[in-house]
Image 1: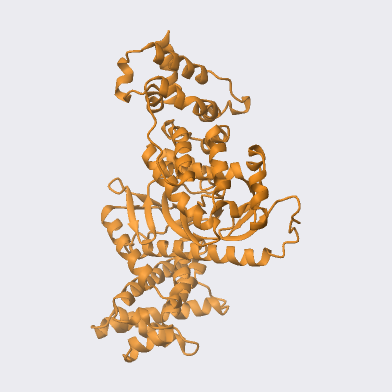
Image 2: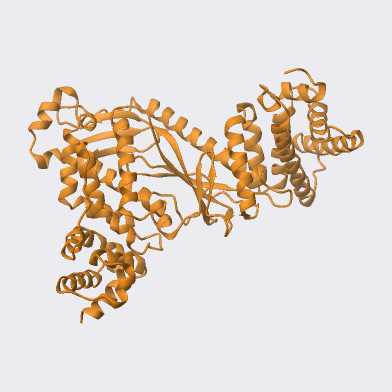
Length: 542
């Protein structure tokens, strides 16, 4: 009888989870010698496997499993202990950290379950329901209230004594309003903060597909240090995740170490967790094929205690400063993602542009519920998908560090226009105009622009061969004149096919020129396009 129960449990929960519960090696499940204790655990697993689920989930088998997660996680540690399993020591001089690690120990085995496949599944939500029902989460919440760093977000100095005098159940329900630079925020309470700290560690381990207690504990401890800084009103570096589409990491490339973090291929588990922090969505016409694990600054912008005798500031006087901070944070994040995409584009070959798209991004603040910002979900892309081979990956890595260290603010407009021309502009005439604007951002000036832009480009790209330089200048001049006619309303616009050919050539020229500008001694460091064209054409000292 237990054999059928074991088979059902393995089919439902997967071998890694069942082996963990029974305290055996996964390879031993096929020929398991079942003691009375393990037989009891198998029957309990079978009971959970057969639990009825919400009938609304009947079209999504993967969501059935996650409706079963809270009750089984809440009893899993005792089941494993019944089979001889012992928890590791949760030693720390920091009371909050010791309790946090113990809470993580009870939740992290959810990462051993088969990852759900559909958007309606609720892996992370199942973990949160589980932890909120565990006594360890209440103990962690009470430790947070006692902690000198964290209690500041729930009360001010005048109410410390009043907070201490509350009953434990009421302490866990003390509310506060927290608004973050990243745009996240709202009302939260002590128990929710405790669960966020636990989920942060487990979620980070799962996103990186590092599914062990040691990994989840490491991420939780790191998140706790971030949370302490944030709770104290200080700026802190938090994880930032971004989903990327329109590229494929080749079979020989699992990840790329860029200047802004690791670009990696998502696994089913990381997809499931990213989906629950809003980073995976069916609204995009493209498949997300890579994830950037980066970092960004976050900070508590507005704190409003929710005590009965405190008048809640609902007039939103603070809203403008909060909005300004949030806009600044996302401008920085989008600029970083533009530079990553630019590094990929610079690594292109002339016949295969690497036109990556940043789909969405999210700050993973350990004190907040993570919400994503969708950047280009509903934007159409004309460029094809490109496979990143190992040799291209090495080039991307090199360009990322050069762009991060050397790319000047004066060329950011040109960078964005070139990315637009190579990726989003469905009308080829718009793409052509954008690409030539990149030329102007590199070498233009307010007056007599044509000669300065085309002459500087020709000299930069053909410095040693006068005849080739002359021919290139003629081609550039024709393209520039065509662009000027389009912009100024000429009745004879190029055909769509001609415009596409002009765009493609203008993009290649812009890319080649930008690569050459990085190699030209001192050129990229000059303050503006006027100084750059004078340096190339007239060889002014710099």
